[in-house]
Image (tube, rainbow, N blue to C red; front, side):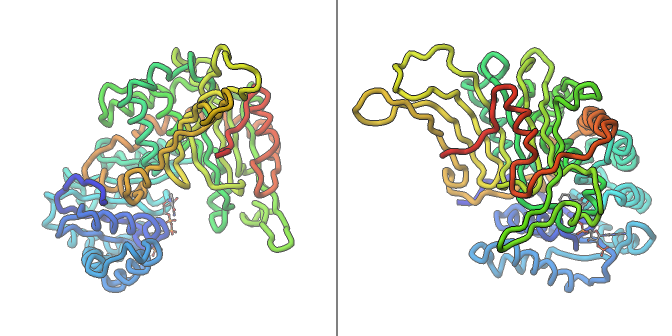
Length: 492
Ligand code: NAP
C-alpha cells in the first residue's frame, strides 16, 4: 500500500549544497520516494548548486549513487529512477562570490509562477551570503520559500543575526526552519492522540501525570564532525532544538486549530513558561558528561577528545536536565530530558508516566500494580505503546501483569514508514509551516538555553566522564532517582 498524497503543481527545488552529505543521504532519497508515490509532477526540477564543476549528467551519476546507497534494491525501479534523474540538474555556484549566480538565474527564468524552494544544505555561515545573493539576483518570487537547518546560531545573539540575514530577503511566511524530528510519524501521532481522542486530554496534566521523560540516545560518537561539535556540544546540538520541540508538543495547550500559527503560538507559550535554570540551580538540575574511550579484546572505541582531535575539552557529549513547565497545567511535574553520544542503544522516545493508582484492592500475591505509561518511540521503530495492567490469562486466581498495548505504525498500516524529510520537503512545496519553527520559538528556546551555558561556564569544571556504551555519568541516574523515579527501560 502506498501513502495517500496531496497533489501539488510542478515546482523548482534548488538545493544549495546539493552534492553534500545531507543532500545525498536525506534530501535526494526523500524526493525520490515522493516521486515514487506520484507526488512530484512532470516538469518539476531539482537544481543542485555547489562550487563543484559538475555538469548535469555528472551530477546525475552522483544522484544515482545516492539513491543506490539509500533506497533498498526491491524499492528501486529503473523507469522511475530514469525519470527522477532527468529532473536533476547542477549549476556551479559559489556562495561567496559572483560565480554561477547568472547561470542559476537563467535556469530559473521563465518559471516565476511556480513554487520555488531554496534549501540551504550548506554550513550556516553561508545562510546570510546565499540569501543576500538570492535577493540581489532577483530570484525571490511570491511563491519562493527558503529552508534552513540547525544549527541556527550558537546562542540567542548569533541566532538573531542568522534570522536577520534570512529575514532581510524572505518574509517570515517564506522561511521554513526545519527540525526533522517534527516530521516523524510518531511526533505527529502525539498530536493525533492528544487532540483527536477524548481519552487522554482530561488526564493530561499535573493531576494525573507524574512526570515526563524525553530521551534521544545515540550509539555513535562525533566521528568526523569533531571540529563542529567542539563549537556546539549536546545542549546546543540536541536540546535547544529537538528535545525542546518534543517537550513543547507534549506540554502545549490544545491549539485553536491545526494551523501553523495556532500550533506555534501554543509551543511558544510552553517555551516561555520553562522555569529558568541559572547559576543558582544549574548544579541540581543539570548533568553534563563526556565519553571516555573503551578498549575490549576485539575493539577500541576512542574517547571524545581523540575523535575531536583536542588534548582537553569541556564540551559535553551527554546532558540530562530536570526541567519544569511553570504553568497551571504542569506545575510540579518534572520533565526529565536526556541525550548523549556513545550510549548503549540508539533510541528516541517520549515517556509520559502517569501517577500510581490511589488504592490497591488486590490481595498480596497478585503482583505489584505499576503505574500506566504512554511511550512514544521515534526511533528506531516508530510506534506507540500504552502500558497497562491486565489480569494474567487463565485460572489460578488474580495475577496482575504490566503489558504494552503495542501499535507499530509500519506493521499496523502495512506501509513503508516514510522518512521525516519526505513529509517536510513536501510541506515546504505546499507552503505548510505547521511542522517548522517560527523565529520567536527558536529565540525563546535560546533564551532558556543561554543561562544554562552561562552557569556551566561559571562553574568552570569539566563535564563528568562516562565510559562509552553506558547511559552517561552516574549523576544522571542520581538526577532522577533522588526524586524516587527511574529512567524508563523497555522490558517487553
Ligand atoms: P557537507 O557534506 O560538508 O556539504 C556541504 C555542501 O555545501 C557541499 O555540497 C559543498 O559543495 C557545498 N558548499 C560548500 N561551500 C560552498 C560555497 N562556498 N558555495 C556553494 N556551495 C558550497 O555538509 P552536510 O553534512 O551536507 O551539511 C550541510 C548543512 O546541513 C550544515 O549546516 C549541517 O549542519 C546541516 N545538517 C546536516 C545534517 C547531515 O545529516 N549531514 C543533519 C542536520 C543538519 P562544494 O564544496 O563543491 O561547494
